[in-house]
Image (cartoon, rainbow, N blue to C red):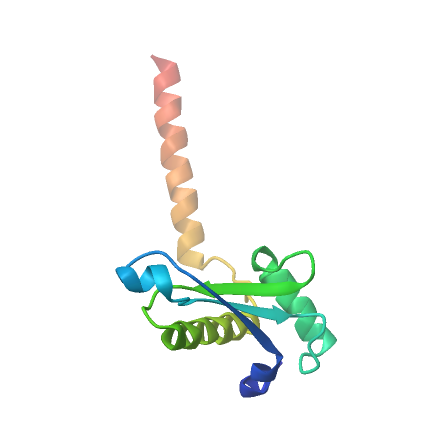
Length: 133
């Protein structure tokens, strides 16, 4: 499942607002908080399998209207926050599309089996000695 990530930029919508935190008076008068909205269902670039995977993996970040919302208010400038939120989005998508490795079933080694049986014998012997007293 490969996605050409830069193509998704055209499907973003941004909303700016005032943010809290560091910045002094800058916080009170400049809208530096950036919210990225990405409508998963309306995406023309993601195929159905990819959309389904996004819904499964990022369910907590998607609202009822199938819009993925991410917010950044870490930096003091709007431009920097926009860069941060876009980076967050692509990082989330990359993690979302990573295929988990299949588990290879393994058997216990001969030494491990013998050790387990030996400890069982010792425990049984200890319990046997307790009963005889």
